[in-house]
Amino acid sequence: MAFPSSSTAFARSTCDYPDITRNWFWDGSLKTRYRTAFDANGYGVHPNVTSFTMHEEAHQQAGRVIRDLNDLGIEYARSEPPWPYRWTGLAGAKVCKPGYHRYGAAIDFTRFDWGSGHYVDTAVHGKERRLYLRRRYLAVIAICRKHFGTVLHCNNDPDGSHWNHIHADRGRQAVAADWSYQTDTTIIQWAARDLAGVKDMPIDGSFGLKTKAGYIVLREKLGLVDIGPGDSAANFRIWLDLIARHGMADKPAGTFFADEAMRADAAAASD
Image 1 (tube, rainbow, N blue to C red):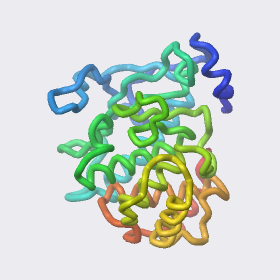
Image 2 (cartoon, rainbow, N blue to C red):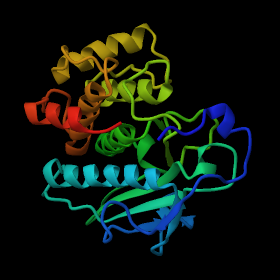
Image 3 (cartoon, one colour):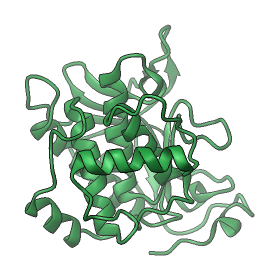
Image 4 (cartoon, rainbow, N blue to C red):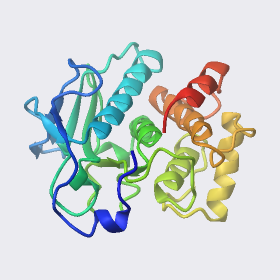
């Protein structure tokens, strides 16, 4: 469904729209946990299974995120596969404050966990020194954007509050790439830097000359010269899936390519 415009969403703080309450995404066994604190190393603490209230569409889209992350763990684990998905950490969902949280159309993710020490902690891994952890965080960002139109994170943080969580909302649907949106541009910049080896690529959300050059390098290495991410939502899903596969597997761009099955799945998926 189409949620109200951002000007309307941010004009008030009262909650609106019907909602549901769940303690799982995608499968009833894949529980959600509330982040209650941070440990001495800055990692989130998620002691208990917790139910969250949100719009049904947000729950459905988040379920698709978790489904895809499970598939990545099974098929593209960095080492000793498979990594079946286990649980998801959240900071919140429906909250009566200005923005899309008041409709239950926004979710704040804090951890994605495949078990056995394989996870993404959103307070730490996006700025990690270790490349494989930054790549895994990027894989999560790409999958979130595949199903949500707006994704805010440590490298797309307009108000300085998203350094410790990933905010995904349906104020914008999962449409074709638009380089005027920092959500889309930062993914390309990040992938160019950490997957395609464009070391001096800034991740600032501005699609300038340096970003355009990095985009061309990334496009060629991924073998996507004939698939324009701005032409359709299906095309951008192919880009996002390929970025996620490389990030999850900790491989440089050019290790995997789009096959007919990926193209068919992207065309069949909903926005």
